[in-house]
Image (cartoon, rainbow, N blue to C red; front, side, top):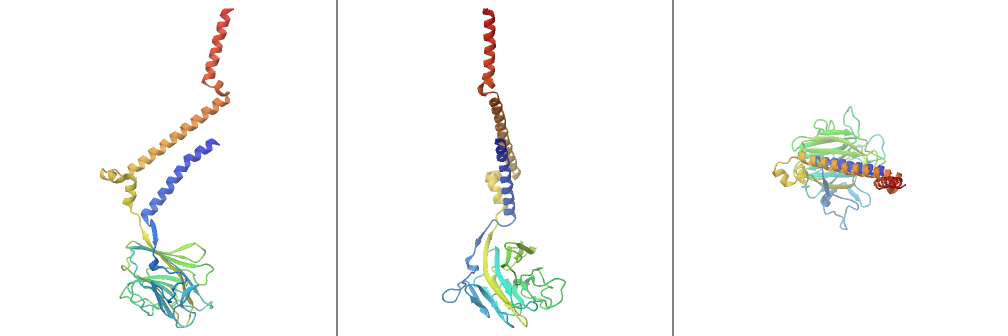
Length: 342
């Protein structure tokens, strides 16, 4: 039992070291921690006693159910509604998580969908899911109605990076200028539908969606080297035509993403003096292995000592060890003296 315990102690530091290495590599590559931004988040009851929100505006056909949702459009024809942040988002890197719901009574004809905006302008109604065309920034469209034939299915998530001059390809559902897309049946699901947008400035844009099961995120698309406008506004809009749906925003949570620096990680291991005198990161690995071997030596010594102790115990305590051997030698000498005396 003691041997198993000692072996467990030996293997435990190895597991801890592997976990720390994985965390460090992940932090170096992406996000170390996040900070929630109250100015760009919204939850029930959404409005204060004056029927306003300090950080958000909503308008057109949008209305608020304080216990449940901000409904951008009802399931009626020719509706349009919007929700926009009042302040621009100044974080260089951020994570935006939106819980939404698209629902309606019709199982065959429904539409048109809703859009999520990260753009230079705000609150300008228009034909693109209830917002202006020729936008500058990112438009992410949760499209539930296909205007033309496609080899993929709808509902569909599609993104476009607008330059302020290029129109949205409405006839082909944004296919002409698509930045990234995926099909996902997010309408009338059995779980809360959520969308997560992760943006690292000029490096990385990733979109995930939860619609199959709770906390099961499905990758939609990832694009490298994307540049959004500095300090964009966050917006949501929805539109219905001859076909319709309820388009609801349940909650919005925005985080500022703090990236860990690879240099900072090296400084923790080697110190500034190490970098000054040209000590490479490999030296820190060497020292780690030296400590590991020393630990193994200590454990091996403990195992050897335990084995010797067990052997002495099996020989009858002290009589089975060094002092027992000395006792037998003295008995032999006493016998010799007795023989000479007689």
